[in-house]
Length: 309
Image (cartoon, rainbow, N blue to C red; front, side, top):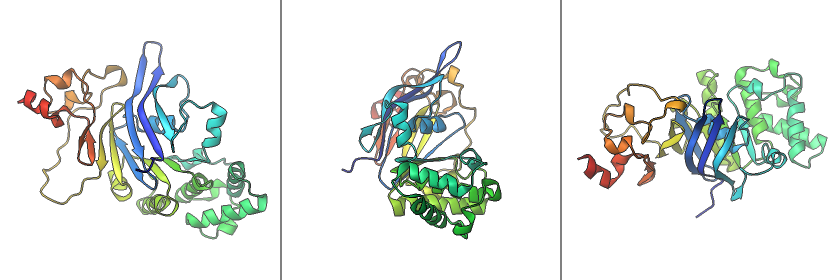
């Protein structure tokens, strides 16, 4: 079996406050294979973005990784010194954030930023790096890249800026891309183009992609598997279900996700679940394999069904 590009094991992330320590990520584990797109979904505050920031080593104090481990192609990276992690970030791990203006310096031309990034992580000359930058802009769909390379970020539309950010993310041919809400602020037609670009990363470059989003349409179009997060845990992970067959109609779930300071014992979802029983309020469910999926729910445990009955 091929070693996964990214392997996260029992990850815990905490944020210290004056009154208590809040656990934002509580025992998260998953893998992403070469060329695979893993979609990560969940309500606001579920821990999606914090998981991504932990992987790339950008959890700032008072936050910290309190436990677990993160491996990139078999190499542990969560305990590396900041300088060594900085070299991995950008070269072996690329990042695409929601707002491209946070990733681009408004005072420098697009080409200067691309060339600087390329030369930081490769041995290319200035001239060769500029040629690669032009090629990358063409690859992500920037028209007339040999001319637009000398433009400033404010001279691009939001969709074009996001394409530039993708070019920055892939310029060092990373093994892994973390994409955090990369299409949220874009028009639907531009979203489709960005989705197509992200899919091509895996197909053409063999890049593993962790795609964080609220948009289930984006997940359905892009992802090979999806992880559903809730209160800092993975509730379910597996292939995306299809609309084929006679599946029951989906209904709206009442209530809202608990605050980090008020997560109930047992299953964090028990107060909103119509099928919860006593064990759900006492014992935290661990992931249970169900074919190609894993579900953190006592109802999928054979012994639990007998107890519930």
